[in-house]
Length: 265
View (cartoon, rainbow, N blue to C red):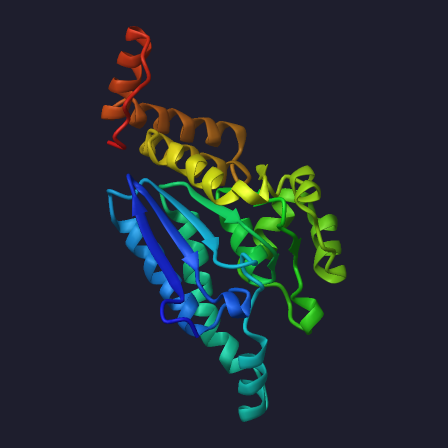
């Protein structure tokens, strides 16, 4: 295992979390997911962090779970169930923290994303893909059912029947195919991916963070609200946004015909 399974870098309001098990294609084990969860909670709690980028070292974004560890646990006790019940506590905590965090969380998928790697990308607010990226569910290929929030997010993005097809047939999606399905937001050249993805995320880190958070909550509530309920959510959110310092700065910049200097306040 790498000494630091998740690298953490901060730069002007942007936190970059890098999965760092390149020899294992950044597959998730207990130490990695616990470290990722700790880092996400730290980002959630730290007001100076205004956007989070998640990426991977080496050739892969994240190849999924550590099947060798699952196999060893199953051989020891006769079932992989206890191992996975423990592991998924941290997995689900990480996904929930991404989903409920006010700041935008961006997956910068530098290479293959399979199993949990695909689930992690689905949970993020935005997905940037290198031309070298591919996406596949992969869970049932190992005799496992989908996890990591994928059964929540994927049907909402591609529809129930398409999602189920992807879960049972483990289709490998190119970046273009994933973009056509609404999974990927932007595709970037492989040779400049790290720089372009960082620049994209840095722009969000310099934006009106509280307005971004309100937009994130509104998108999340829209699929479960009536029109009238959703508009009430909008009414309260826009009124709250109008009480922020960033609103004052945005209006002043508009009147003065300059670029706003948002502070996330």
